[in-house]
Length: 162
Image 1 (cartoon, rainbow, N blue to C red):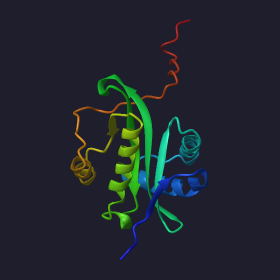
Image 2: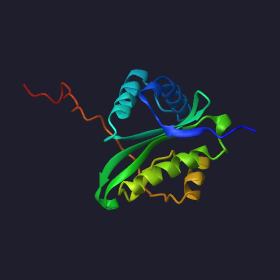
Image 3: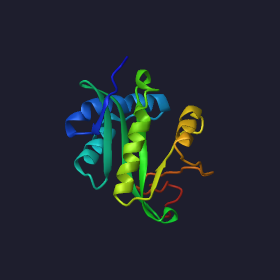
Image 4: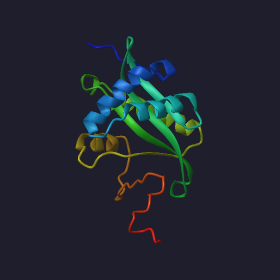
């Protein structure tokens, strides 16, 4: 029987192993992985706790899972909220309660920090994850997530008048 991995805060020295896990998660969820962009964002998050937190599950010296919590301000939810932007556990370590432990830690952190709401996004077709989150008390909202690059679009030649 496997011993349960240790759950702890991520450190900058974990960056290489974290990127390995992020790449695996993105492959699983069919998200484009840009190592430089993701590595830079993760490095910034690890250095600036005002942006959020990263926790990892570690078996001996190997990271086997992680959770990223960032902060958002939303009037609908009464102000500051925690947003689980990523949760991933390697396939062979699933069903050992690691995801639940990571979420419990994020939830406890939010509660102790005066953050009332914890939110996450999950792919519609990921039924196992949706059932897991519902079992923890998360509720689904009938909404569509939309995003756009913040850089303004360049006008096309047709839009430019001489």
